[in-house]
Amino acid sequence: MRTLAVAAVAGFAVLGTPTIASAHVSAQPAEFTQGGRATFAFRVPNERDNAGTTKIEVTLPQDTPLTSVRTKPLAGWKAEVVKGKLDKPVTLAGKEVTEAFKTITWTAEPGVKINVNEYQEFFVAIGTLPEGKDKLELPTKQTYENGEVVDWAQAAGADGKEPEHPAPALKLAPKAAAGDDHGHGTTPAANSTETHEASAAGSDKTARYLGGAGLAVGALGLGFGVGAILRSRRKA
Image (cartoon, rainbow, N blue to C red; front, top):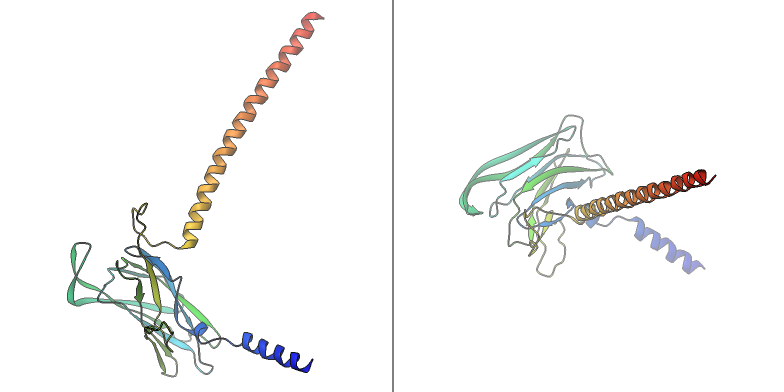
């Protein structure tokens, strides 16, 4: 019994202890389509027990530049998107691109921060996502109010093992061979919503047909009933 009790306590300790991976700065959701667009959030947890997070800076790729970047307003935080000339022009969709967005920075206003045991989400919409690339890494620096800076910029190793400070990344799936007219990024949730709406529309049409058929049958029955009453009155 004592052995079982010790094992149970150890098990609860393991389950109750947050893993390092759970505290990483990450992109949520993180799966989109190549050549499409992406709307997601940088999820930033506060990892320190003696300081809050007051600044987040994201470095955007320059080898596959992004021509559209928009941030969602967040109370207490000022967002700044910096755009500049590329060191070397890049051709995208048959057009030469000489400038693109380079960084996104969120800075907390006085008295605002991500406190201990808290996290915050910073939403952004970007496009067009690169094609022929299965991952888009977005190195991010997290600054604490005491001046400490944590650089989430490490790429996964060849063995697939996660580094200590991995960079937030988007997984990019190839476009579908057919039925992909716009090339916008989609998520399973979006597909599920579309399917639900299509099913609801089909059910609504079926209900209308059945309702119409029911009214027709009811009208026919009413006609037979009236005819029977008139015939009986004539006989009487």
